[in-house]
Amino acid sequence: MLFGTQVKNSLGHLEIGGCDTVELAKEYGTPLYVMDEQAIRLAMRGYHQAFASRYKRVKFYFASKAFLSLAIARIVLEEDFCMDVASAGELYVALQAGFPPAKLALHGNNKSDMELQMAVDTEIGHIILDNFYEIEQLGAILKSSEKKIGVLVRATPGVDPQTHRLIRTGQADTKFGFNIKDGSALQAVKTVLQNPQMIFQGIHCHVGSQLLESDTHYQAVQIMVQLLQSIHSETNAHVDILNIGGGLGVRYVAGHNPPSYDTFAETIVSALNSAFNDEDMRPELHLEPGRSIVGEAGTTLYTIGAVKTVPTDEHGSTRTYASVDGGLSDNPRPQLYEAVYSCILANRMDAAEDRKIAVAGKHCETDILIQETQLPLPIPGDLLAVQTTGAYNFVMASNYNRFLRPAVVLVNNGTSDVIVKRQTLEDLISGEVIPARLR
Image (tube, rainbow, N blue to C red; front, side, top):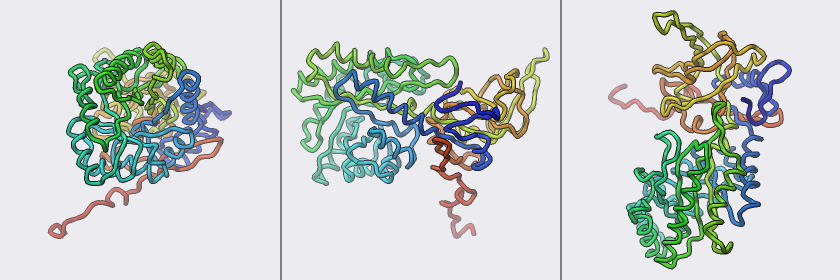
């Protein structure tokens, strides 16, 4: 599979954004995250176009947890997206990138006083409240600051999305939000309405990640509309915003076939249209795409090192391992929740893919990036491109085994720019101190 601007060039090399990946690897080294700027922009424009003709009031919030850097924040802003953040760090990066505070929303199931204070001080657009303790926290901070701030109440609709159990968030048994069925969500709204410094704007939900169908969102919208109507009937409060989160999946392997933006939009809007006959009564719709914006726009380049074939049973079966110069530290998803990927031998795309290969990382764990894939027989020095690594790779990278975090380059129209520098060995110990008694 090829994504975005990826093509095979005349040399038989993988090219992204007009840049030969073999040359990128020579210039910047590997492992290397490559982000396709045009693919990112087209994804955001796809959301705008799909919903613009179907719904009068809609806003998109890029889920920055998928991939956040100063440069990516600028692209998000230029494409008329707002952005959600889930920590002081993400909020800081957004502000340092020049993102308007009014276009930011703060998430989190256990926000600290410092994070809430930072959100209030910088006057962000709104905070998504997650629990009753947090309502008390925010109330105390607002009282001492004499400021007001917009809030949404996060509710759990109780739907069970068809995705991996570790990335489900909308079921009843979850750490996120207020349960609808037991009355907690409605009570949370009533509690917020009692505080004049909290400007109640609406309700929020998120059902899960990497969803390859839109039925779960349809169910969630129906349940959230019922909550909206209950809030209005019991409190007479106007619910101006309905945020249904994100979660739309991407293509990691050939069998993945997520809905198109148009299909997704039609599903969501049809649920709202059936609930509200009067267009003026419909809430402003908010969505929070992340993975579906940057996932397929990212490719990770690795250099292949050791290649070896080992027996797997007494009947003569074997497995060939191709080891790469990264793995768990730059992409923990296969180990965290069995994520799957496809890959390309980027320097020999014309060679026949006639071998079953396991792609192994080089960390001191059972570090397998791809359990089985079809490739030409790799040789040391080959360049491997792992597809769809734009979401939850760079942001989850670590220094396990004291590996250096890779660089990130942004490619577009034949130009490549470093947007995150590769760590150096000096960076690894920049924050460490030896106590005087150990010197």
